Length: 203
Image 1: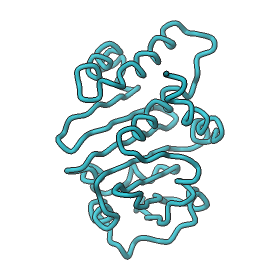
Image 2: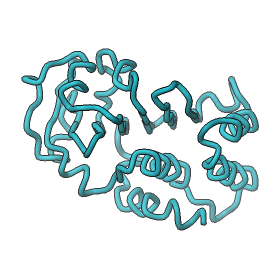
Image 3: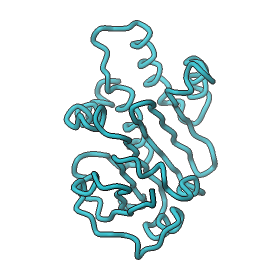
């Protein structure tokens, strides 16, 4: 079950090595239900600030955040750290179901928060400092996203066993899998390449 449910994202991450090792900052969000115009307003910009974008070709440009409407959801995608400078980033998911997966050279973090404020999160930097692995797992098991607790537990089991064959992309794949199962939006090469707009955030 574990292999089957995460395999599409493990394959995606292996194909796109730069998503793991070579980019400054990966940030992917899915917010639903939300319109594109409202998302832009919440970010602190205007519809006129949307620039038609040929997908991934723009991602190396400073401040570039790809954005688009996918059904009832708004998706943002960023490989250059622009999301760190997003005005009012906390407002993007207000009153919506909002998921975010992000990592850089130093940390790996995930959150999925539903419109009622419930949800779950995982922060590798916080783990071991503010919360133990067991506390993080217990939080998932007791919360509304308990169905995914075993996916994180497997990651900890492999880590603690220091298995030689442990999959280095597994935890990232789990995070992206949860976002798809909760929102119905699949992150893949076609989605990234089809996001129609870019916002250039002030750095």
